[in-house]
Image 1 (cartoon, rainbow, N blue to C red):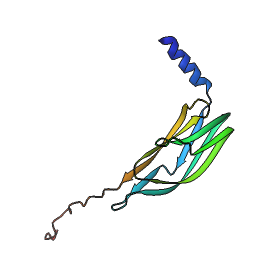
Image 2 (image 1 turned 180 degrees about the horizontal axis):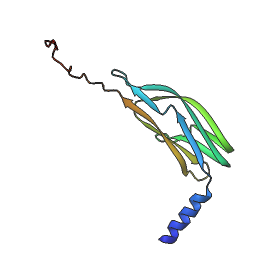
Image 3 (image 1 turned 45 degrees about the vertical axis):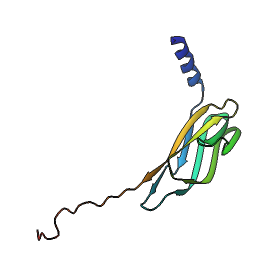
Image 4 (image 1 turned 90 degrees about the vertical axis):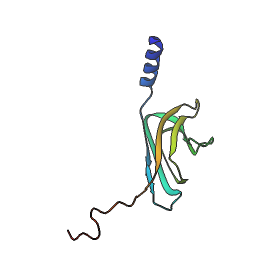
Length: 122
């Protein structure tokens, strides 16, 4: 078991670090709004040449792929009513190398009770 953990740690250490970002990462829906429509900007960068594809986790087909690149950018419009995960996967193995979440938050503003009664003068 220890050898397997060491081999996995060595394999992970040999892979170059990938910086993966999605902007914006948050959408706040106000009362009465059901879906969020946003222009997302995806960027990734690696110190080594990689062949990667961007996936929206609830879809089988990739949104965009890059072959033998050290960086990638992609802009698209997203319509979502729930939080959505995105992954960068190796094209040859399908292994996820990084992931980001676009979070949808509902602004449930509750009416707060006034601090004093309306009939109070003080």
